[in-house]
Image (tube, rainbow, N blue to C red):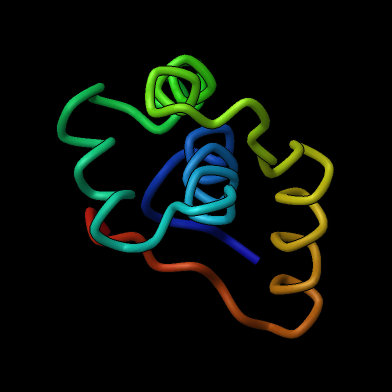
Length: 84
């Protein structure tokens, strides 16, 4: 299937970010706006959580995002980002 929209590495970062613990739609968009990319937000998220008093934060792993993307492709679906 031919994909349009976000390049796959960036899409995987988006999937990882939105699936991190305590990251909902509003936080996701605020992080994108603040850091400019999901990858950069993922890099900064543990420090932000620590400053907020959270000792542990569960991040969505790359393999989990890859599995989501694979499952969508197998089902004939695709993710559509707000920027698409």
